[in-house]
Amino acid sequence: MEPDKTTPNSPNRSTIERFFSGLSEYIFESRLGVADVQLVDYLSDMLLRFVRVDSLHKVRRTNGRPATEVFEMLCEAEQRIGLARREVHRHIGDFTLFWSGMYPERLRKIQPHESADGFLDYCRQGKRAYAIAAEIEGGEDRPSSDLLHQLSDQFEMCAYGLREVRREWEEGGSDDSGLLLS
Image (cartoon, rainbow, N blue to C red; front, top):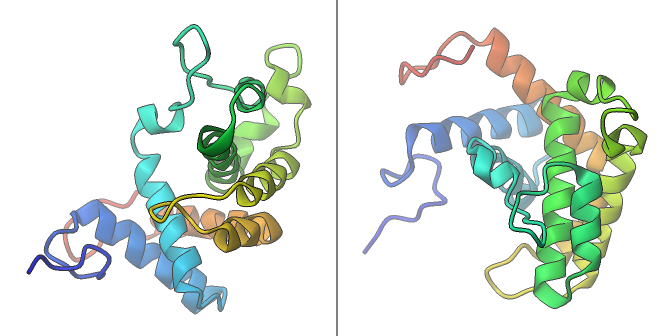
């Protein structure tokens, strides 16, 4: 029998998976008092997915190039239906939550004359995107509509928690596995 990959100390989980899972659990459960395993697991999985830049820019425009700005992703979402639309809106929610939480200082530097995203409120767009995704029925292997509604409703708290994850990561030094955290 294969060990459960969702168990924090499972031998099938990589060091970085265990790191993001443990750090997210510590921040959200111990510091913020959020004992919602499904929410915390989703956020640590999102961090793991976005370690890869290609995951950050997985939405493709009609010309095949990645949509690198939220404005472009919103345009792409409007051209899709069903699960494809749900996935783009979910990605917009994840993308805006990631940047709002992990690198909010970068968002303050986006200028309207350089990018259409300079006109957007990432928090508002993220909440909206999760809410739209939640209204489109997903398959069994997808996040539940309830979880997506929760991400929409608690977007600001999740972004704050991600900022705390980053702060802990930067101030933490290294963990017992030798993984450098800063």
